[in-house]
Length: 105
Image (cartoon, rainbow, N blue to C red; front, side, top):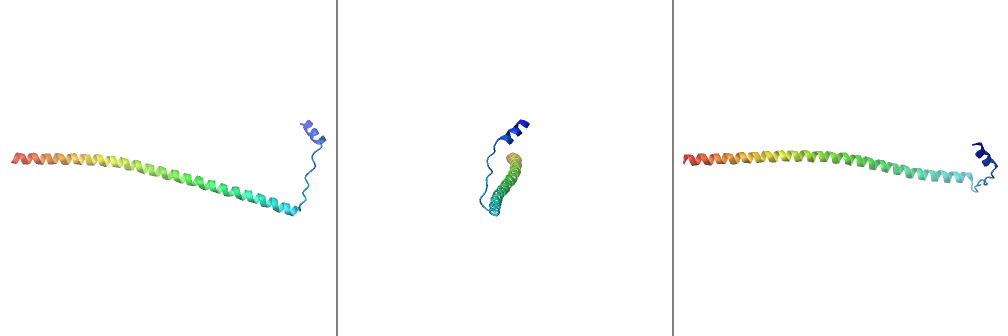
């Protein structure tokens, strides 16, 4: 590690860049640049969070509707079975009435 430190010290470094603008103007420009990219990424972060919340809400809603649809399908099956049983019972009663009429005639 010492060898690298010595190499760096003995190597002639490039001359530092001297700015010709006033420090106040540079500070203003750098601050404006920083504020713009900071604002841009804060807006993007908020947008992403909004999308994630929207996705979570839609997923939850879709799951609730799926459960309701399954329950409605089960209820429909039960009611169709009940209707079929009542129709069979009605047919049986009508046949019984016909037989009793024919027997009495």
